[in-house]
Amino acid sequence: MKFKMLVALILVAGIATMSYAKSHFITPGARAGGYGTAFSAVADDLTAIYYNPAGLAYQTNTQVMASLFYIDYPVTASSKYDIGAAYGGPAGVLTSDKYSTNAAVPFIGFSTKFFYDTVIAAGIYVLGGGGGKVEGLPAGYKIEGQQSYMVYNISLAKQITDKFSIGLGFDAIQFQDKLVANALGVDYNRSAFGFQGNIGFMYKPLEKLSTAFVLRSGSYVDVPNEPYSSNPSFRKEVCYPLTWEIGFAYDVFEDFTFAASVSQNKTSWTSERYQDIFQYRVGTEYRATEKLALHLGFFSDPNLIKDEYRNTYSLTNLDMYNMKYLTLGAEYQFTEALKVGLSFTHSFTNPVTYDGITYKYEVNLGRFDISYKFL
Image: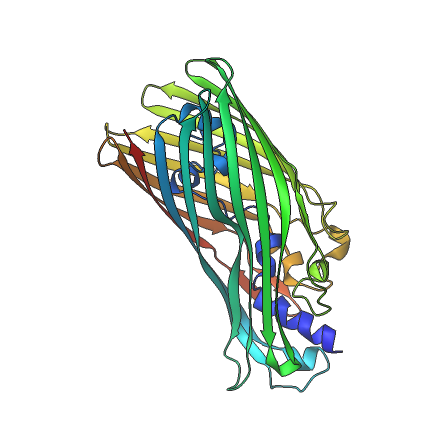
């Protein structure tokens, strides 16, 4: 009974579990975000260590970049959900109609050219996660948690020819997970590492056209066993999915670029509950002046839960997680060396009724970049 109640709490809280159920919707960079994350064939800043390490080969200046990603993920319900009564506990004690998740996650990167015209880069960034809590509980009750995937990356890239480059990356992924539900006597904090390899290619057959392919190996993280984990799939292990992506970018006009990509996340091997999903991305850049660029993009983020597991243990099974995102962004070149970018992303999803209560999710994401090249 205790486990059922705990799952219900995490179900309505929608806290950190959703960061995994939503796949790769936390990705670094305002410029990339403005492109609707269709950035694998552009990859012209330091977030290339994530999107496509081959793009580093064309970035020969020593440079540094810092980026901040902020997510606000509130959930509102049409009426209070009686957690205790629904799962065999004390009726009317643990009820709530508002649940919130938010996070401010960073990206920090550095690159420089060295030995035989190879570019080396390193960075630290968060690829998924957040903290959340159930609001409106009686005094003394607490249900909150955090979960994150912190990535420590080192990458190498080299131009093989004027038109073709290759990049290799190595990720150490730190999975961190903590949960407090004092009414149930649950309080844990655990952390473990997994490792992932990345390879990217960039080919430019025409002056106006760039194409890309990226493969990420996925990762297995053997975490300390926790029977009351916020996600049943994370009780004693976490598997990060293998992904591949293909993309292109084309200069339609001298001052206008269109980019698109498609990727598959092989999540079926990470849990019997999950299915492989495809994500689609499109983005544009309009260079309004020599210093100002404007961005507009779109990307999809489908639910990865298999149909047979829908509505069985978690709100992450519901169609509200079949999301579509619209992105807007701008980038300004203050000097030849200094550049700043901003982007905003908003989700579009339909309200969903579960157990007689209608839930509404609205996701807002903000990104801010600042980069500097040593000329």
